[in-house]
Image (tube, rainbow, N blue to C red):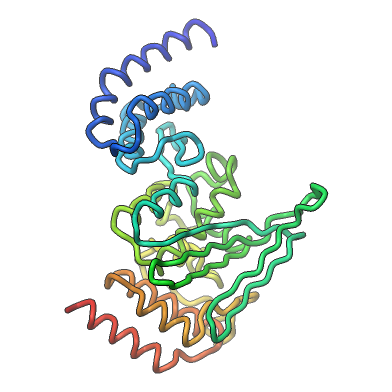
Length: 323
């Protein structure tokens, strides 16, 4: 580091201590030490010169958001990344899992990547959704290319929720990102893929407001008004809409679905029993509306009629939540 860079770093360190630290102390949960949090921030900045040169307001705001969520930006729980010359706070998978454990809403949640040489099977039967995954780790062999990613969540009431996304679906979400060829998608593709499937699964889960906020903290990284976002939402998987849960505009059904044909490679996500079980687990009207849309899309997109029992369960749950 040259003398000029050292001067900038020293000045920034002083600013962090005098300006940012008092604000961090106000919002940081008691179980996260102030000294440790500040040390991690300084380390993150020293390891990424772009953060040192980033817009100060965005850097400080990102740090305050991380502190509010109780996540340290150590590259594991959360990260400070650069987007458009400004700092952006982004929770990582480990941070989301940490928040889940603290929330009491869920018993556990996990997300894993599937490579082409792994043994992987996903199916639905009368007992619900199932995943069999045996990673190819013997002998340190190359596992091949990433082909899918999945997430499994268990509720405190004993419910199990599963979400599976293909590499193509993940890439459709990536294409909606304002930084699809740089930043976290370029540096941490596997991590972003795991986060994407958790985001999609979260629409079906009982989550507190603060936990949902953490899951969706990096919404600013996605350009949901771009032509690519709209086109992605019209695709056979509707990946941008269903994975991100953020496109509010109405979109046309893809040509294959308009003709009553399932999209290529479309795997049914729900049967009657799993749909009803998921509906009964909804804790808010918003969560129910999102889930109902996803269930209907799944049945129609795979050439199945929505069962009357499923429609009745949606109506009953909406009425119960309204009381």
